[in-house]
Amino acid sequence: MNFAVNVPRRWVALAVLCLGVLMIVLDTTIVNVALPSIRADLGFSESSLVWVVNAYMLTFGGFLLLGGRLGDLYGHRRLFLAGLLLFTVASLGCGLSDLPHWLIAARVVQGIGGAVVSAVALSLIMDLFPDVTGRAMAMGVYGFVGAGGGSVGVLLGGFLTESFSWHWIFFVNLPIGLAVYLLSRRLLPAAQGPVNRARLDIAGAVTVTASLMLAVYAIVGGNQAGWGSAWTLGLLALALVAFLAFVRIEIRAEAPLVPPHLFRSRVIVASNVIGVLWAAAMFAWFFISALYLQRVLEYTPLQVGLSFLPANLIMAAFSLGLSGMIVLRFGIRRPLCLGLVMAAMGLALFARAPIQGSFMIDVLPGMTLLGLGAGMAFNPVLLAAMSDAGPGESGLASGVVNTSFMMGGALGLAILASLAQARSADLFAMGFPTEVALNAGYHGAFIGGAVFAVLAALIGALYLPGKVGEAAGPRSDLAGDSQG
Image (cartoon, rainbow, N blue to C red):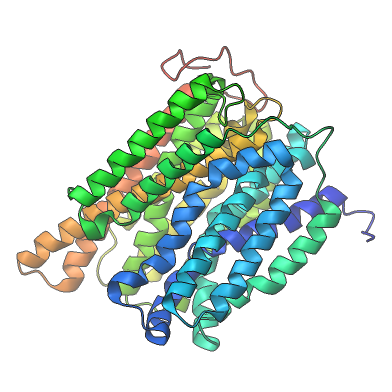
């Protein structure tokens, strides 16, 4: 395969890698638009329909850490290809499903494949771009895919469902998955030197995967079962027990799945805490604003997708060079903090959006600020999370930061959705019109998301390094002195 002289091979490889990641990201939201059609066609009940989404989230969140560690042990390229193939085959199974339980089973397999691909993707970027300048630019492209893919999923899901049928939200993955698989075999770097053949920590893998799956299960079902119910609290307690067992195993293991020293790095700990808060704020933006547009302003699914287009275009501009240049010029801390503050301001603007809001006055300004904030802050978060990982640990660090995003997004959305629901229910009970009650609930969720973004900015200002490649200082816990 020959490429033009002016197109470096590694940038073509990055484009292929990001296309595969985009396919995974899309599947977290593309299904939401098609749920009514899926329910009518396959005969799902109201309570079982949620598992079309939850089955994917459950295995995706549960297998991120294991997928990242397997990449370190057996090769990032090999695991990426295996995960991609599994995801593509599962997509075919989803599209061909004619019974509810078959679709849910296929979504479970999709989640496993998606987790493996996502967990090793950042490691492959590290392999492709060992230099600081190239890595900063490449992380910007990856950041756009991660931050903007969800809103693209809503737009694409609405188009495919309205123009063809719900089956095509899964069939569209087949040509993409096949093309990415074939190109990745040619372009992505194989393991550099001998692959780490340390024995896999089976006990650690089982306990941490069980802990993550139980936690995700409790979170995604918390609103329906009730956050104070015995079911939800019991699942969270089991998740905690499994996690404590995992910690005990890792302390004693000769070849631990997650080396304890990884969390003595102040930068890694801080960046993952920021990742949790950042994801919570972004999920508030994406999901709650989509609900506002649909249920209050009565936009169609296609109009909702188009409403996110300004933010996507801004994030695209950052990904195509601006983000990398900003990081190289100003370092990690300042762009991250400024981006998070801008995101908080965008969420605050949505928190005042009225019932009869107009796009130009009440939607576009918030979308613009959130696009700027996401484009500016996402790259520094990823760079910080990966920067302090030792040799042979990049896959694990990638899995950890992806788990932080996943858990932060799921938990943040559950908390903010519960806040919105409780506020709306109170106003319903007081006799307020439906639109007024819904909008007031969404306003509370937006304010909560803004608070998460501000907290993340404060942690970044205190604990992240100023420049790319700046020494993190001695490994210590988060309570150590802040860096200058």
